[in-house]
Length: 244
Picture 1 (cartoon, rainbow, N blue to C red):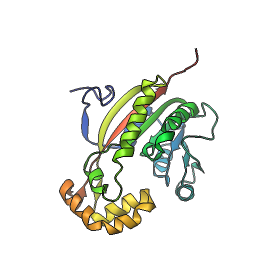
Picture 2: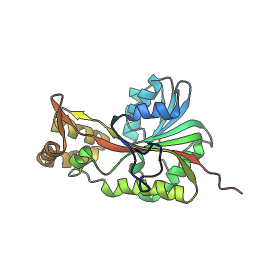
Picture 3: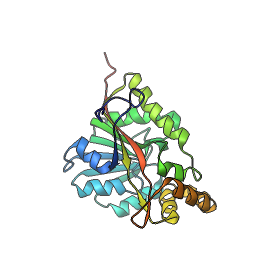
């Protein structure tokens, strides 16, 4: 079996673990979080920031959605949040011990992805960790009628590959894992995907029956509900200086 830190997905098959969590991977790859200053890019309503601050990290979160930022400030008063885009981070160079993009890079417009990677590397003093959902798996298949993210998820992976191919960063670690998610039923699932993007609400209501059928097809009955795994790829990047 290939080591999980092997190269990019298109070079050779990589190991998959049947269950994992983004937070466990963050702690494993970045080491002790206590006292470290971390930038959470695409922080949403503050779920990751809350988990990081509980582990002693100092967290700054940024997200283009003003409503999400307002909710994050209430949910995680220990952290600092501000509205802004990943492609133009309002921080000086080398401001943070680490920069994280969890389930957020594919929400960046395709033409701004390279700029977002460059900005993340600019403001960090070390490594940038990107954890992205792949365009496959039970969760993805159940969500597709409401919003099919096939193209943008592939674009996110291609943007990372292009950035590395251009010599602007190197991949330090690269791993695919299954994020295991449990739902009591279709309404709980739809609540989850609408919470990520409220613009999905109308489609979620209209397509409830189709989504329920896909959950039955792709999901695994478990713990009184349904298990829908979502494969994720985690990539740890280190910047490469382009100066002579």
